[in-house]
Length: 170
Image (cartoon, rainbow, N blue to C red; front, side):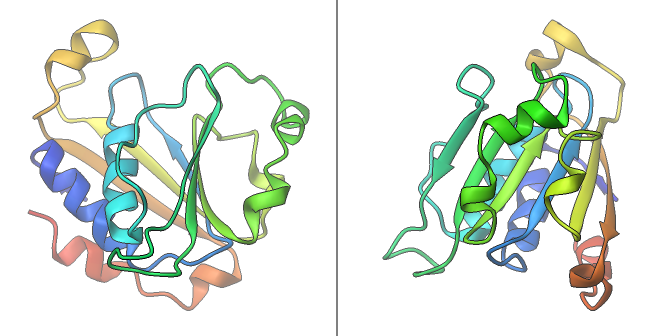
């Protein structure tokens, strides 16, 4: 899938967020500035959690509670993890995601190779900048095309049709 702007990336993620339920694990990959946190902001809107989603780089984990008066009252919280500085599945285990895994939607940036043991089913989402800008210059180029690939793993996603997401991308 391709999106043209940060807003269209968030809109795609928001539609996906409406499909998520407690216990879902999403693993986001992509270079610096690829849009992983932007994507997570859209997921948060779709889930109806507290706004203000920013990268948890220095705290590792941020929990965004479901809003009682939001679009999905009583829905799952969003647990947002940045595993950039973690080096092994053992370090993931040390931050104790198992306590919230069943009751929340868990999104792990930079989690490939580290979190697969946490759940039988997951969505692996790769984000790439359309022009290949990376690093410090990437922050200056938020509004550019993205390529987003979603790979569904496990029985939870075998019965969910994600093709509708591609049909609505602008």
